[in-house]
Length: 380
Ligand SMILES: O=C(O)C[C@H]1C=CC(=O)O1
Ligand SMILES: [Mn+2]
Image 1 (cartoon, helix red, strand yellow):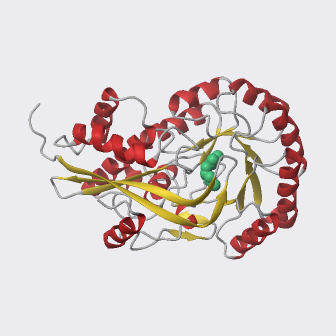
Image 2 (cartoon, rainbow, N blue to C red; image 1 turned 60 degrees about the horizontal axis):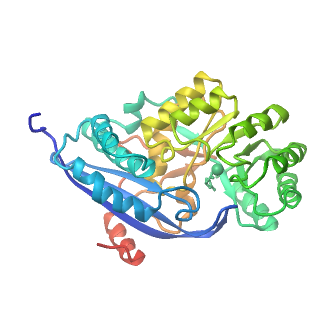
Image 3 (cartoon, rainbow, N blue to C red; image 1 turned 60 degrees about the vertical axis):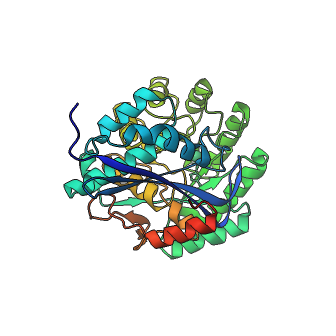
């Protein structure tokens, strides 16, 4: 092939280790910090694109870690990108996928950076490359995960007062089922009809625990139960769905279009928690949404607790989904103590409002980044 007119000049991986505003307790781990993996791709026409991936608690949640992403991108992916045509994200991703297996999260960060640069090059918001927006703002849920009932209620009341969130997801599964349900019921009683209360069990329950728990959660007025049992147990999910009225959402069970197709075929879920990282990137997540729409599975815009880059990339894609009945949980940057953008993302009126500029529509504060990188001990 002839030399591309616009080539990829550099692929950099930047790790930032940032404290959270409070401990964030899940059944699998308690987070006190979050490691952002930022990918910066520069092209010969002077365009720069940014992408991001995060995990939760290192390897506690999935098979990629921030450190493995860095090594795999630098060692195996960057050499396949350098010198190649920067203007076709699809061609670059096809090339990468034909040379390596797995690595959904790392590929998502690279794909996002390629799309960001290409959208900037064309002078359009990233959402335009996915068919255009059907909305300019997205409802955003907040996760109550301090581990303490009174503290969670106070936190939720503050969020309602500030008009930041009126959908709350409670992390449960670390305690006995009845104790967890009592915690959830107390929060729902305190908030009443002002808020939608949902739970995420992060696979901690057995099927019998879930059968008991889901019945009690329905009585308590909870609106949605996320991934109560092991990700691989499709049959169990199908039985739980058939025997309960409370809607069931698949999260860890959903690693892209092939899983979406299988879950839909088995009628194993009411709702997909769509995450760009879990889907291997923006295009994979778009395909998950298409399968959901075709199969009448509800859509929810999920997060891996990314910082600003992954969050706004997800928002650009989710804003193109006609049906997003369950809203989103794109609150990641609000859980972090540090801001890496020159202008922070716009959270108000219970929603995240999308920027209108080209690409991701954000401006990274590179001086702040360098400083945080040194503090993280990850500078190079
Ligand atoms: O959904 C998950 O399992 C992971 C993540 C998303 C929000 C949150 O608090 O944790
Ligand atoms: Mn979840």
